[in-house]
Amino acid sequence: MIVSHKTLKVLAAIVWYSGPAFLFMKGSDLVGEALAIQPESCALSLSWLLGISIGMVKTKFVFNKANRKNLARIDALESPRLWQFYRPRFFLFLGLMMMLGAALSGMAQGSYGFLVSVAVLDISIGTALLLSSWQFWVSRRAYGATIAQSN
Image 1 (tube, one colour):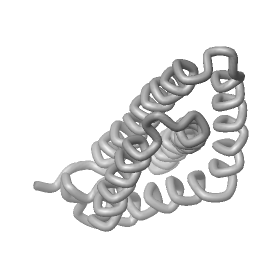
Image 2 (cartoon, helix red, strand yellow):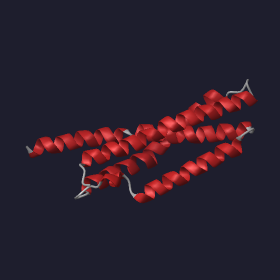
Image 3 (cartoon, rainbow, N blue to C red):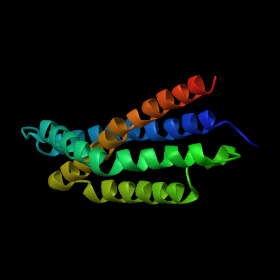
């Protein structure tokens, strides 16, 4: 089934935005577990401060580029199909990252330092996904400008 480029971008955005929602909830749960082990610790502020800071760096150097590249790939499709909003290898990588994240969370149980570390990792990736999502809005404006110019 052939669909519009806009439809593929909307599907890509839905998948992209689901990442931060899931990772922020998971990171918060891990911080809660760390605080249960050491209630007087600075795990909450440390995890979020480090996670957001690292996520900002990841956004600039990795995630913005990856998102822009995928949106350009979508724009270049001549007959876009519903399943082409990401390449198959993206879904393979996503599945592997989800399994790794679950494994790390499981291994971290009962270890304050490990719980905080995995929480920082989750929060940093969630932050990078959220901040790089502006590419969808920039792409949307560029798409609208292209249509206006062609009329």
